[in-house]
Image (cartoon, rainbow, N blue to C red; front, top):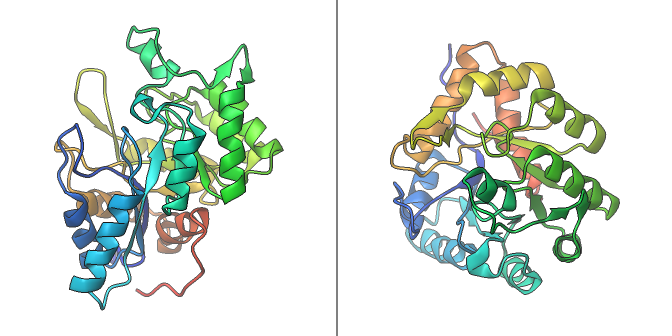
Length: 289
């Protein structure tokens, strides 16, 4: 079978240094990896704040060192404690700097903290209703036309937030790693969100497990593709951990795994290139082999 091509891929979720966790690439090294494979765009995620300024520095260096490349790095913002939690000023600042995705709390979410035995997490939903602080964040996301990432909320919380966001006119919603043991969405719950709200499902290469190991998600992701189809499924990695392959290697293995299991190349390219480009609001362009 023909080997897949990474040219034109759009990565919506990858981690890099500087970080408090060990990462396989620095921002600059990630940018250079993107240039090597001909990536169209890469979004850098950091659990402790915003990455838009970091991304723009990478873009400046790319323009100087690799003027023939059109790879673009984008930032994001994660609403955990170091940035003030559900902080609209932080959201607006990140978006003004060019961030593409606003993630609700991840490692500091009430859901994840409770799963780990703590009771100090940031709540977005209380008694089944989205709280006012989260609604204020959603209003800023709507104003700037950014992507809402559901972070590490559980299925019930995600449903409440998505329902509220859609009622406010937010159309670009990314449900992060629904297969992750923290978010723990069943395929039936994912089907409902896709059917009723048209959200995007970001299904990634691997996930950290409670014992510190990493579980490669490819068989589960293939099952989800066969169940839900390509229209709302995004192929990305959530990569950057030392225990996993480097970013481009993980993405290539993911795409090749799908190809080797009979997924048409046009579907793979749609999920790894066209659909994430649409999510980020990138202009349409021709994809080359």
